[in-house]
Length: 152
Image 1: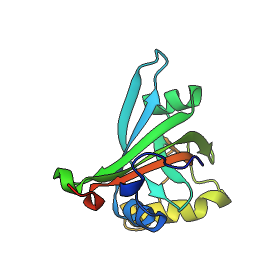
Image 2: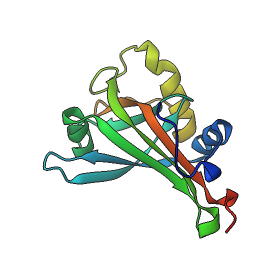
Image 3: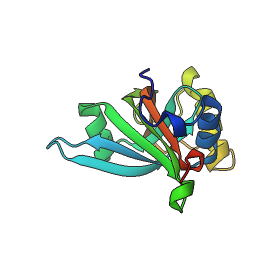
Image 4: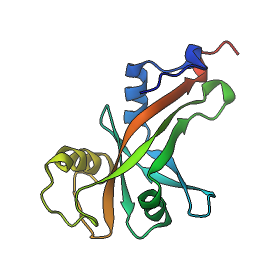
């Protein structure tokens, strides 16, 4: 993974990054449409310490974009006042995981992901609706910032 070069003074440590991603719930996923225009959508996410997991409707513009061009940028941020802004940008390639759409077939790599996602967002209940599928993003670059560390 490429190291963060700029803003190192306000970058999160690996422990801070993991804690932040465990706390926040919504990310913004940026894809590239077929005409080259950007497309940004909010989604819930799961961070497992090395990959970002998203579940997406397979008949969505986001899914169409990623199947044509799997490059993705995802931003998770928080804060209201300037001095408390913090966030993470993850750039990488989105890879489908499991069957498409997800109907509940046993997929070993998804067992822990689905359970953790269900505990975080649906009181532990796993639901396969036959409309969504999983995307795994293995970061190629992670950039983070925490303005609370800056002397403002």
